[in-house]
Length: 171
Image (cartoon, rainbow, N blue to C red; front, side, top):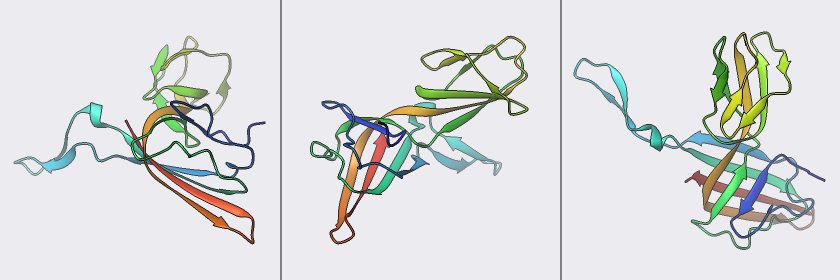
C-alpha cells in the first residue's frame, strides 16, 4: 500500500519509508541560486550563468507515527527522489513532442481547454503528443537525484507523533 506519492531511495536501499512514516508529507522546491542577476551598462537586468546550474533545493516535512529509514543518510548522501511537488510546462499548439526539464515518473497532459489527453507515449524526458494537438500543459512528478544537506527527527512521546524534516539539494 502506498501512503504517499513521495519516493525516496538511497543508493543502497529501496524506498526509505516503512508503513506509517510518510503520510501527509509536504514538499517545497526552491530554485538554487545558479548564476546571478546583473545590470548591463544600459541598466538592463540580465541573468549571468549557464543552464547547467539550474537546480532545485527541497525541504520535505512530515508528521506521522514512525520514523523513516534515514539511518544511512548523512550530509552528502546521494538519494533519488520522486517529488510530491509537480512541475508544469506549457506545450505550444501543433507540437508533436514536448521535452521535459527533468525525468518524470507520472505524466499528465491537458489541452488548452483542460481536457486530459490519455494514452500518450513517452520515452525518458520526451512525451509524444497526438497530431494537431491544440496546445496545453504537461504536469509531472520529477525524479531528482539529490544530496542530503541535513535532516531532523522529533518525537512527541505522549502524543505518539514522530516528525521529520529532510533538506536536499539537486546534484
